[in-house]
Picture 1 (cartoon, rainbow, N blue to C red):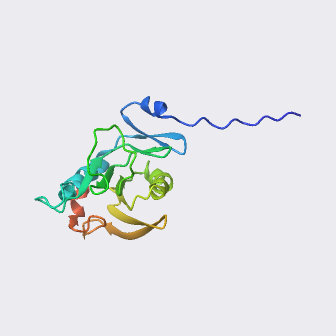
Picture 2: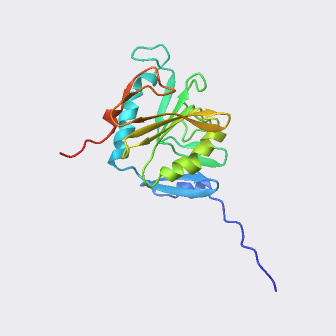
Picture 3: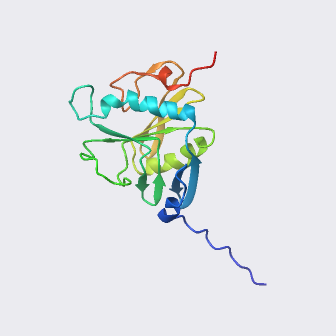
Length: 194
């Protein structure tokens, strides 16, 4: 009797990712091409409000209007080893990346990422993407759930994520690495219908 072994599955390539329609977000994790739909309104609201709230950091250090010192980008493509991830928001300290280059993707891991989780992406963000961020020494990860009205703040310690705090609903928060300002979380959520 002759037995045949199944060949190893073909690993996805960047060319495969480029063929994905623009209406989807495409990532490659552990050689697997993963696509997700564009965000719905609760997700989009959180992302928009977050960019506004973190604006004081997205400036030159010591400049007017805030503490500065960061580049904060929306849906930037990260090439981290063989993995290609697209976090909802990513931030680099300007001391590590003094100039924001005109490039289609970044190979330098950010200092902070924010994933806005949804029922279709929550498991992917927690189980597949967070280990890649840990491997690449991303210091902080925020997971925001717009349906549960929560912000989970994680800090990396010796390759392991430590949950520093979970903020919820309408409270104000000071969250690492942006604890210099207080953020009003109630602005992030869709208003309830009367």
